[in-house]
Amino acid sequence: MVAAGIDIGSRTIKLVTLENNKILDYHITDTTVEPIKRVEEILKEKKFDHLVATGYGRYLMQENYNCPIVTEIKAYATGAYFLYPDCRTIIDIGGQDTKVIKVKEGNVADFEMNDRCAAGTGKFLEVMAQTLGYKIEDFGSEALKGRNSIPINSMCTVFAESEVISLIARGEDKKDIALSLHYSIINRVMTMVSRMNPEEKIVFAGGVAKNKCMVELLKKKLGDILVPEEPQIIGALGAAIIAGKNFEIMTIKERR
Image (tube, rainbow, N blue to C red; front, side):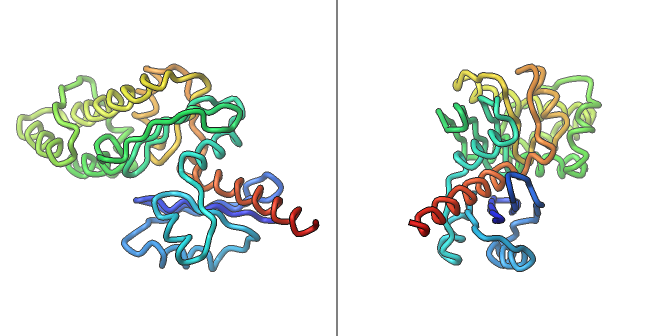
């Protein structure tokens, strides 16, 4: 039996297929303004027995495919626990939100989520990288070359962009500005993390976990953290695991 999970996020769509508790493959693509069209393109290339959807666009899957859905919180907890059975805290920074999830034996014990503002998320990093003339995939590495931290007063994407332009005009080093922006995000994230009393092991997931500077600065604050080989697929992986469990339950009921 092949189970699949799809995570329709604000920036990317992720799909994971799973068989016998092993990841068969995964796919990541941009969400664009036509997410269902993108989903159709992905699904026609895949074969599976059961599918569960998560992410912001999960209701689109429910409406268009009559697909079972699960919250991102549960999906991330399930996916992280699958990879790291000793994980107790998950920090997920995605395209438009930040989540801190406490996990106990694979179940969600508590969580905090900031989805009202893009400040400190992947979208914020994309805009700031573009303003400084960096590719998003290079932004973290370039920020790590910074030597001085400059106070960044605003975390609002619009106001922070104006502040960065002013710093460039003042002659500040681009790498120092990049490093300072990363420090600002980490300080904001740590406010959420501290309120949740994090316990080890801590897993850092989501697209922002691919940013080397974010990983290094989080390690300075929290010590050792675990970063999955592909941190963007944890939600889709969790949905695939849940799809497999649902299929097994359905099969047992059919046998009765």
